Structure formats: structure tokens, C-alpha cells
Length: 318
Image 1: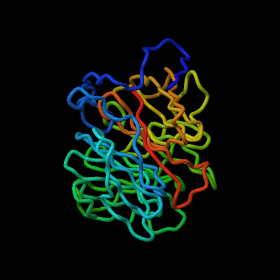
Image 2: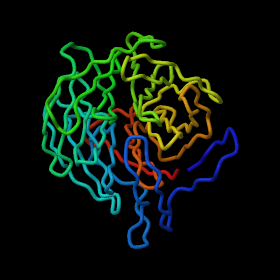
Image 3: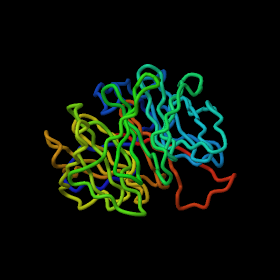
């Protein structure tokens, strides 16, 4: 792994033979987790997915299991982070898609379903507990999801709106939140993509992939305030987001890097701390944390997919 440091920062090293130290920082949309360690042996920093999988989303909860969705048919694959071994948890079906994912503390898995839909699965069995039709209109791209308060919030890359559904695997009213303020929806490109809660838990941070901007969204009103970037002009190709305290990680997929930002107290400014690159990155899309690692799936968008195309997930230390 190589890093570029726009300004001095602590050194981070990819996990090797030694176990990683425990970390008790609470992540932006998750809970504190123990560091990767298994009887003193290092956990794998790379593991395979089934050939032809077409991954994009990854989610990890309080236990050492990663869940990765398939764009091909909405299937869900679960990998044990301690061993790298995995299995298909949900077989998917024709017409289904799984992109962004998040796990909840109650064992539920929220899945962005691309074509106007979202699903909630039991993360133990893979069973679909409830399906939400977020919008009836065509041409929508339900892309990512985060958990905040009593709702799961989904982004729509082709519409200036977020959608909130009740947590807990319940049926209930879907809240459509139009984006206003500084938000300008661009035609024929992906706009809103990754999403995560703000440090104070009162709002959302949304990345706009094109032209590469960050926004602070008020979930009461939908007002979107553009976040000033310092140290780098854009986060173009911004995809998945992860936050630990006031540190924001932005996966910039086709650039094969993660940009790491320091947020100010009011989430009005983000200052670039460093970037993380790795020769194993092959268009990483989203990230999830366990201990002091980020795990990312390689979507390989620049590779023509076939049923035999190989896919994997990799881990970097943070």
C-alpha cells in the first residue's frame, strides 16, 4: 500500500503477520468493534468473491462478517473476516439488484436495490423481510444507504431526493426528502451516491459523484449545504463514504484511492489529511470498517464482465 500525504500524518501500515491493536472508536453509522485478531494470527487482507459476482456494496456489523451484494441478480454473499471463507447467503433472483448495504445492530441488512426499490434482509438467514418501493417512476438509481435515528436513508443518483424508511424491518410510510439549497441536479450522470450520518447525528453527508462534491443535508428540511473542500478541489468519482468521529473517508472509485478528510465541528469544511492507495485496488466502490481496517470491494468497472470474471475484497489499515 502506498500513501500520499498532502500534509504530515501518522503512518498506517497494511496488516501483515502481527495482529492489529484494539480500537474502540465509534464509526459514523456503526458501533465500536474489536480489532482483527484471531488467536494471535493475522486475519486475511484479501478474499475472493464468486466469479461473475459484480459487487458494489459491502457492510460489516459488530461481528466479523462482511456482506457483499451482487449487481447481477441481487444476491448477498457473506464472508468470515477471520478466515476469508464465505458463502452465498441469499441467492438473488432475476430483476433484483444489490448495490449499497448497511447492517444494523438488530441483525437486519438494508439493501439499496437500484431500480426504485430497497430491501431488508435477515443477516443470519438472508431471508427478505420487507421490500420498499421507494418510487414508482422509472429511471431511478437507488444507490446507497445509511442508518440514522429511526430511519434508513437511501440515495437516488438520478433524482434530487433521499428516501427514509422505518428501521426494524417494518412496513411503514416512506419519507421522500427533496434536496434543496445548494443542490443542483445534473442530467444524465450519477449525482447523489454515498451517504453517512454527521458526527452530531442530526444530519447526513452525501457525496455527489459528478462533479465531485460533498453536501451536508438537513433531514428535517432537505436543505443541502455544499461543504467547502480544502487541499483538493473535488472528490470526483466519489462513491462509498465512511466516517469515524470527524474523519471522513471517501472512496473515489475510478481513481483507485480513498481520500481522508478532517471535518470541522459544523460540517461546513472538509480538509484533506491524506490519500490511501493500494496496488490491489481495481475500482473500489464502497467501504466498511472492522477494527482498524477498512474493507473494500473491487467493482472492476473498467473490466468487461463475463461469468468467469474474478472479483475480490481487500483490506487496508486506517
